[in-house]
Length: 503
Ligand SMILES: [Zn+2]
Figure 1 (cartoon, rainbow, N blue to C red):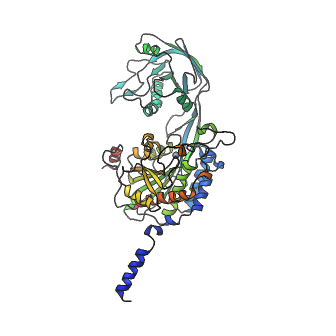
Figure 2: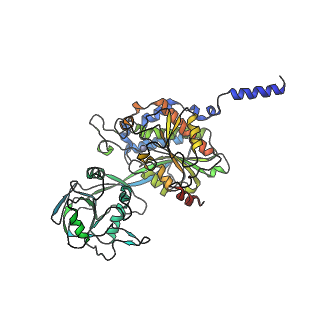
Figure 3: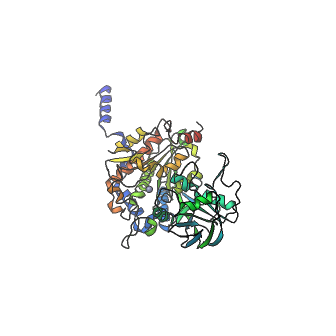
């Protein structure tokens, strides 16, 4: 053969050979291995991996050992991959009873004291608007008020918003402002369009909060909500027409410090310049625990919320990506971040963003993987699709393993703002959430979502493998991309991105 023929033959052989992606380590991931990891993480032994529980710690240790076995470096600032986080776990008083004016208020019935040391109160109520102070906006609901020794009554939310999220966000601030001014208690008036029963069952359970460095521990003044039967009483208080007395007591909220951890490993990139930039691949490994903590139906036969789909699947995908990417690293560096505290309010990611292990402005993208389950095993769902300039990398990653994309499913559920990706987005980092294929929140999803039935035995392991491969390849594609992702103009988080990267 002459040289030209050899050359043509070589081209033919190459073009007939298996497609390029089959040579990537993603193609060599084995179902058996990732089935094993999922079966462990979702096992009864781990008791639902609730943040702060021994099962949660066992999951973290398992992930850390896996990172170590792959030869990944612990992220600097961690203690052998662990970023330790302290949480406060508080439970409302079991007994509370107050007489306000002529009306009796009893815990759960029409009163929900959430926090405060056990106390007996005998004083007057004083109305303080929304109970907020904002110098920039010229608000001071406490101007001209002497609340010392009294119990403050306020409207929920702010003058601008009674959105539930705003109401909940302002709760601890209102408590602090009242406490700083010498009040002995503060009650918010339950004037929100949300069933009281849901409210009391949600807040009646023990709840967890982040204990940031320097934050004080348990609040001491009485804080809660009252549901009036006659709105005119508090309305007249607002006018200053009557002086309402309050007397009664409660048994005190309980407070306990617990610890958990994010697990973080770093894979350096191969490109001398691009390795300074990081892609964060994250997945929460915590779930909701057992019994009453789980928040759903349980029985004596089964009280463990195993969280196989939510989010052992995502955690296993993170582990699979760590394996495939470490075999053949991409140009940019990758931070593998297994997060705790998601189910108790995205607290692990919130803590991470407040205490980053790699400067946030060096992190160009976040792929979070978390899901409620799946009802379409021919696809993956991508929440945030179309928003960060990465659609091509994402689509190609899925197509390589025969999967299609469901862009932004179930918009009415506002899924983007309900997983850890939003913590990174709020900090300005372009972020998406990749989840197993969900087209709709139908009964296939709700049957297992946050239920004791979300067990390993019901997971489709062939699909799990494809899912792992897809998450890994999407991460690889973005870490190798010529263009840096950024928010589409006008995106909700574009301004935060401009600020973060000083664009
Ligand atoms: Zn989840």
